Length: 279
Image 1: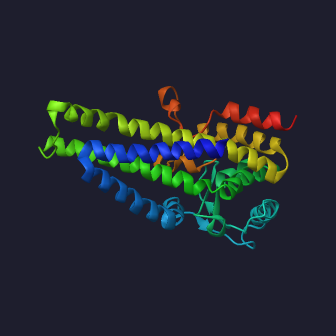
Image 2 (image 1 turned 30 degrees about the vertical axis):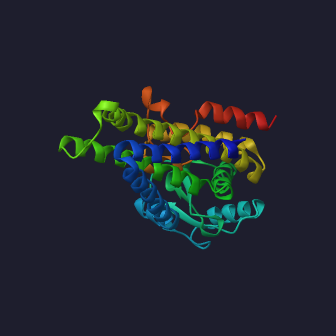
Image 3 (image 1 turned 135 degrees about the vertical axis):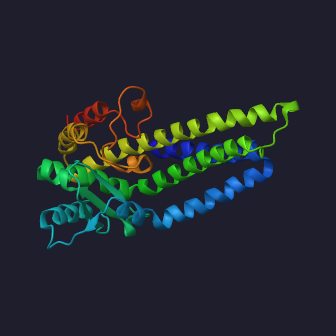
């Protein structure tokens, strides 16, 4: 069901990109939007892992440098029947973790020093099982493409706004085309963001289930998520909103209206589902 839902949402996001391009620039704008998406997706496919690891100053570690962490990842990779991913540590007190890479043969998992200080071995297994489930399900690529298309839509809307300010924007007011384009400038980025968030939340639930199966104990991850939620609230991370969806716990502290647009499902619901699995 999650696979079908994700495919449906991704299709909706792509269609929105093309329609936004058409509304803002006619057939030429639609073609530009399509080729822009192709170029950006190709770049994301090949370089997203290197970009995000450098962004957070992640350092690759060997078995000799981090024997316990490396050993846990190695054991879980065997459980998941995955190639051994590269292992990274991020020097940051906020407890968090993420996975990246375009496919299981080019994957990496990264943990912060904060998570290593906070969690016991079993809880760490739950977290890393979650990240390897993302790798196995190719969620990193799906999330990157979704973020890329949403970013392209926002970029086109911004370009159209600047064109309007400087007199370069054209719309046919007689048939309502101008009004439709203005409406698209406002609504398309919001719709793209909502769809992107829905994709991310759907994949998080799937990774929770998959991670519990990989480590063998749903309560390991449930216990870890409780600690991580409190830890991120106590020590929020300076993270880019564009990469927030990659972390196991949203690194950006948000309440009220902001929480409605979160890339992650409600923590209470994630924990409830995991605990229900162990009954």
